[in-house]
Image 1 (cartoon, helix red, strand yellow):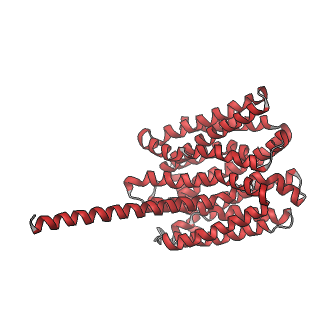
Image 2 (tube, rainbow, N blue to C red):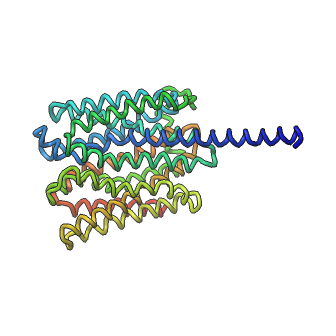
Image 3 (cartoon, rainbow, N blue to C red):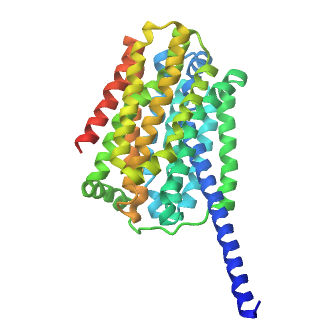
Length: 407
């Protein structure tokens, strides 16, 4: 072999090795971002399967303890609107670290709350700072090559959605064995480990705008008016979220009162819902082939059917009712998460310099629906029982499908 041929061969080999190393490093970073998204969003849902135990320990009424998930979801909606846009204005890595510290402090305050008053305030703070999760998704989009952007979003969103669903499993299991305060303390510890990983592995991000805070928030109004696709996505996802939140925020109470089951069983339903999170990568690829609108309508339709089948629970024995609940949980999570991925695929291409603000507007719509669902769900369960929750899910999801279809 000539020297020239050998040099070309060695150069090709080294280039291949460098490419493989770069790809492996990119996959590792994407998995870290997915983990961060999951750990960041999980605190929103730890309380849901633990509500009966928390009420008993604090001497709170069913109505008072039901405000905990409402304030958490409301805080998240407010945090997305007022804090998530900071990712466009400042180094997103620095924003992540500040939010991690504040979220860990809020969880520790929840763990040490002597009464319902401080717990409610801490729950609001948890919601505000859990917007940390929304800093990881735009980060993945910014770091991924254009041809791999959909896959990166799908991977990070899988982590976020698993965090939502498996948080209930973890909380139910830990609360059953060690108490609800221990769960909040462990969650704070997990965030400190996340901070170390972010410092070690996540790169710095150059701000994409120099707007002041007031102008940054005002620009979101302009973005809302400018992009009809953003408005369609936010409204549709908000409608789908109403029934989704009503289901998950009242499930533990219903299982306790109707079947005499503890928080560990309510948390285990998160395993069923976790199957729905597997829709994230599939929905991303399907949106690339068939378009986001098709996936959003399909997801909303699946969720509507999942709620509707629960209307037949009264015709079944107790074991059959629980099995039907498991099947419905899989279907509604699959449908809602598929629609979310489709809507994110839509908005991230609208304005690359405003991804944090676009993401904030989408999730403000979604978590406004979540907070509304948690609030109305608690009232509906107390007044009319589980059939009212089923009706909320069917109406909300069907409205979302019709809105997206007409658009």
